[in-house]
Length: 285
Image 1 (cartoon, rainbow, N blue to C red):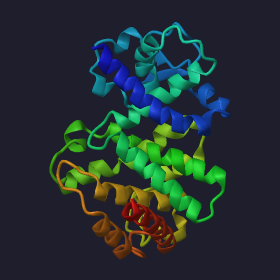
Image 2 (cartoon, rainbow, N blue to C red):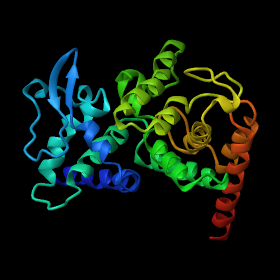
Image 3 (cartoon, one colour):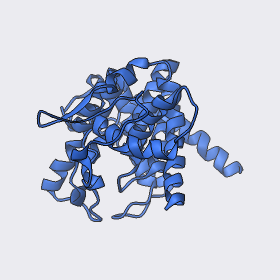
């Protein structure tokens, strides 16, 4: 269905616009992806971002879509063909870059239970908190991208666990926890250690009871501490299959309650400054 194809392109473009500013001056991103895709020691495709006549390898034809996205580079290889079909004839010197962005964006947004709005919300709030804390423009941009891709590792989680409409069992939760490490591993080819570390540690807790490495306090990268607050707040106010959204006030109160245990008090303070301004604006309008 043509309309559905273009709907996918439109949603990819939204995330691509956010990522474009960060990566447009980083040619090494494309260079890192211009390499063979290997699985079990065998080459199964190539991720040459500049090759306009790329076609998916025979070994991938007929493979279900939910098995085609085990890593960031695999996602690029499998999605690039479809994206090129929909943008054929476009004269754009940044076309190869946009294909890379499209693959990464598709990897993030095409999986339940969260959609495009959640990742945008996390990224936006995380940037506001970072700015409130006085971080540099470069650091804020790094957090902006990390906010979008923080859950990319969930593409490695089995469908029955990732999309379960009820609370996870203890065993399922252990499986789900692996998404942080998978996400960091998938981002390794980007050669952006700051983003990778945020993705790896955004589920750490300030009291040391988080995962995957039980880091404590300032051992946790500041960007990860920021994304943790933004992600939890946005999840609480978003509708999910197994729970109704909390009210704005209840979600703010829960973040405040967890200050010093789950969250960094300094980050919570910056968060409160931002949500108060947002609440004032909401009441005035």
